[in-house]
Length: 263
Image (cartoon, rainbow, N blue to C red; front, side, top):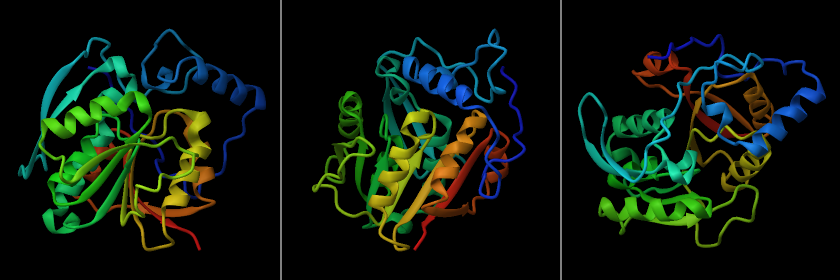
């Protein structure tokens, strides 16, 4: 079992931007472009990497179906989920998605009933599926290669009446058939550094002032992630969501934040 390392800080809201050379950032971005998953994998042979806080992901998950229940201590929702690593990182169920799913299930059916909800970077669609099962009207979104697996999971769970699949590339014009949401969900969207400003842009354009609730679940993996939060705080403020399980997932370097758009 891989050791879990307790981070000294997860939120970065008042943390200064680390001093690093432009060459270091340029190298990181070039390597990210070649291998977007490199920061999600453990490589003990690479002594230049930041401290790794996530274990190696299995490469053999191909067209499997798993079953997940939420909340874990008193199941209210059960989701069948097709997972397939051939789609890349989005085709796998990641810990932050499970944390966010558990949280919205913990809040109960009344929390989401009748709300218009958009999930960003949905991957398999797990969080949005849970939101739909809890009574929300949900649009799960991601890039084109993942639309198929998301649609399979909607059908697998019989949620076609309340969960819709849409293509959404961060930074591009928002589709007219995705309405302004009352709630935005995002889990494990901070991993590919060139996409940081695009994600902030999409969050900002989709949020309607202070009336749009945003739940943002994030797993710390490397020091460069602070660049995302430096960009984010120009548009948003945030605080940790109240969750009785927070101490448990904080030990795994996961934070669940509520974002508020700045005036």
